[in-house]
Length: 99
Image (tube, rainbow, N blue to C red; front, side, top):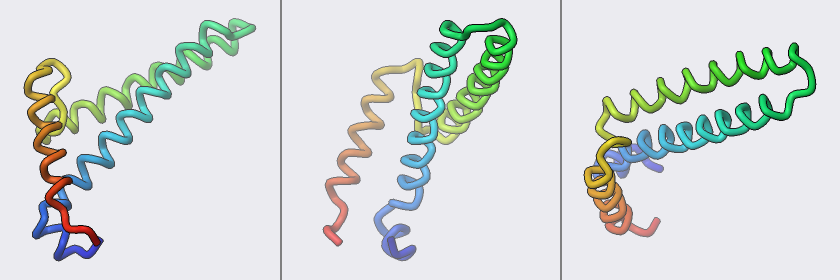
């Protein structure tokens, strides 16, 4: 998207928010996958390696969550505020010109 249009429409920040939320969803998926793999591991050595990866995935999830919270893009403990933010994002998206 053209940077002038991004700035005029407010899409620059929204684009950052979308990318960060997508990264958070991927991190959640990684945590879930590692947790399942730990329960299915065949040897103690493999289990230990998977647990290390799970801990790293949890750390990454926390860092991404904190980034989103710090920027006011994610309210995991306030459902009403998250719904309000989601509705604002929907309205912004609906106002975008068709390019």
